[in-house]
Structures are given as C-alpha cells and as structure tokens.
Amino acid sequence: MSAEIENPVLEIHDLTVTYSKKPVLWDVDMTIPKGSLAGIIGPNGAGKSTLIKSIMGLVPIASGYIKIFDKDLKEVRKNVSYVPQRGSVDWDFPASVVDVVMMGRYGHLGFFNYPKKADKEVALDALRKVGMDAYKNRQISELSGGQQQRVFLARAIAQQADIYFMDEPFAGVDAATERAIISLLKELADKGKTIVVVHHDLQTAPNYFDWMVLLNTRLVAHGPTQEVFNDENLKETYGGKLTLLSEISKLLENKRFPAREAK
Ligand SMILES: Nc1ncnc2c1ncn2[C@@H]1O[C@H](COP(=O)(O)OP(=O)(O)O)[C@@H](O)[C@H]1O
Ligand SMILES: [Mg+2]
Image 1 (cartoon, rainbow, N blue to C red):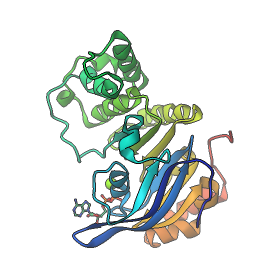
Image 2: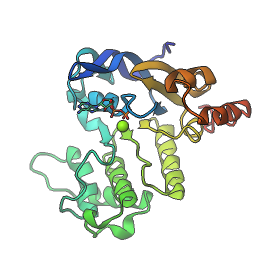
Image 3: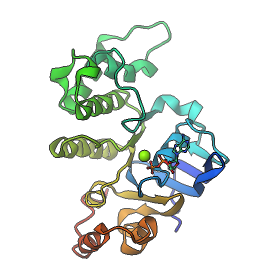
Image 4: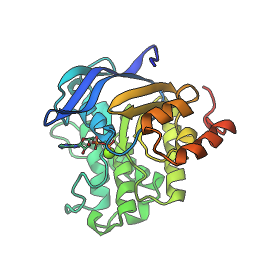
C-alpha cells in the first residue's frame, strides 16, 4: 500500500539493510507527513530499530536513500533528535541528570560559547515536563531504568528539534508516566513537530498514533492509522501468530480510535 503525501518530512526510497548479507530491511519505501505522531509497529526482530538507526546514519545501507526535510541527514542533524532503545547504550557514564539534558542544547551553542542561562532554563523545563526536575542533581547511573528513560526523553525535548525518533521510549516507564509523555508528544505534534516512535504495544498503538508504519523486514503498510491499522495488515505483519490479534479485532470493531482529533 502506498500513501502519496505532500511535503513529507521523512522520505525513504528502496531501503535495504543487511547484517552479514542477511536482509533485515528489504526494499522499504515510505513517507511520513509533517506534524505526525507516527508509530513503527512490528514483531521482535522486524527491523524497527534498524530502520531508525539507518535514518540516523548509524548502520550502513545496502541500497536506497533517505531524505529528511528533503535533505541528507548531515545537513539537518541539528533539527533531528534521537532517543535510542534502552539496552543499546551505556547508561552508567558519570554525569548528573541536568548535564545529560544539557547535552540536548549543544547543537544550539556556538563553537566557543558556553551554555547560557536560557539553555539551562530549557533543560529544566524539559525535566519538569517528564516529572524529573526533583532529580536534577542526581547521577544518571543512580536512577531506575524508567527514570533514566524519562531523562533521555527530556534531553530530546530540550534539543527543540523538528523531528524526533524514539525507539521504544516507554520501556520500563510506568503507565501514568507513559500517559503523561504521550500527551506531551501529542502537544509537540500539534505544534507541527514530527514524532516517530517505535512501539510494541498493539493495545495502545491506535490511540497514540495518527500515522502508522507496519513493518516486518518488508514494509507491510504505512499511512493514516484508520486506513492501515486493520486485521489484514496486522496478520501480515505478525504472521497470524499473535493471540492478541483477536483482541485487536474487538478494538477495531468498537472503533475506539483514533484518539487524536483531525487538524
Ligand atoms: N548489529 C547487528 N548485527 C547482526 N544482526 C543484527 C544486528 N542488529 C540487529 N540484528 C538482527 O537484525 C534483525 C532486526 O533487528 P532490530 O532492528 O533490532 O529489530 P526490532 O527493533 O524490530 O526488534 C534481528 O534479526 C536482529 O537479530
Ligand atoms: Mg528494537
């Protein structure tokens, strides 16, 4: 299924990525429109993290190309924010919480400039938004996994980028915090920022995202949630092996999505 859109902020053409000659992404073509809160959905090993990493230039691509704001990543990197999947990074380096969030500001500073009071304010505001301001002077290594995750989200928010890539940002985060963060992301999307989130919970996915990418090595479908989040596409994505699928069918019958209002 193809979705033709005007002004895609992210455009991927014929993307193939292989690890030791084994394809993990195969001929992926997709676009994401500006202002989307988009979900990348698929089973374990589907290539979701690899897709985000190839967008961020972190894995070599075998063929194809990727454009962000119609440009190469290196031209727009300052405007692109990335939160890696937990477990893929060393979270134990020595730095305080506020220092970690301040790293989000570095792209905004001139080469010889030190962070200004205004940068610190942006960082503290981001910490407030994820409910972590009380921890600002703690060492990042002392925090629980969910708290670290919130700090890294704060760093991404402090960057004030135009497009955000977040790989399973809710892993280890409690349900109340997850709801708070998703409403924060919806606010950002409503302001015209584009948010792309790898997410594995099918129950919440249709309520969170207005655009979806269904992936299993190949692209199964991408487009507005109402058009692509259906039984047939989910079966193709998960190979019918998912017991959850019957519950998803019920969800679809009740049409309990999308939660976001049309703009
Ligand atoms: N650095 C790597 N070297 C070799 N194989 C990898 C590497 N990273 C991921 N893979 C494999 O590529 C496939 C896709 O992985 P990944 O993108 O992490 O999937 P997902 O995020 O959807 O769970 C999996 O089969 C995984 O084992
Ligand atoms: Mg992953």
